[in-house]
Figure 1 (tube, rainbow, N blue to C red):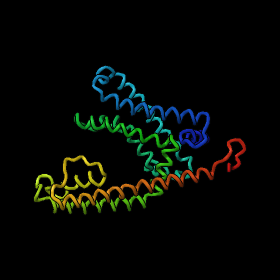
Figure 2: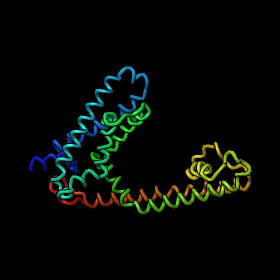
Figure 3: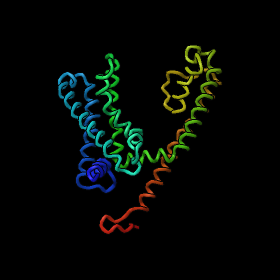
Figure 4: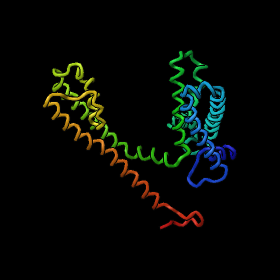
Length: 262
């Protein structure tokens, strides 16, 4: 039982960890970053041809480490109160970060279990980029970012709904205005949504644009509204970051005596 608690504490980093916990956390974070770099480098034809064997060996080593990590987490998670009980390990497997751990190794094992064509295998290799999400376990900043999105999910959801309503309204309006003048560009409301997305995000590729006077006036209004709409999520997240920093400042303590720091 003591060993199980020690393994769980070793694998679950916390602020202020030192010694073996800190070393393991840094080692796993480094391996994750190197994995993402390897996936990117492997897409370069010259590197893939010259170092294919090295890429394969590194992938096998990484999967072995990540598999052992996942099994150790699964074995030791029952020592944590939130995963205690008969259904504790199932709750652990259903946790978002555990699903990320599974996705990190799944592309390696899946071809052994299912017959896949070349296109599917290429897609699975790219899925390995999701290993970058494993850093959320090992970096406090990423964990706080996840908590921020969770805390502000209602505001962000409302903003997303407003954005979709505006996109639908703008695309429908532009379809009815521009369809006769540009039947190939604004052939339907779904096709007009491409113009709506590009305009609301103020990207402005210029491949699709209104040519009628009324369409240009409507497009100008959509651009102005889009600037304000996409500033909302930035304001929500900025406010959330300020709250997190304020809470961190209020709970700072001296590492030597443990007293709060003013």
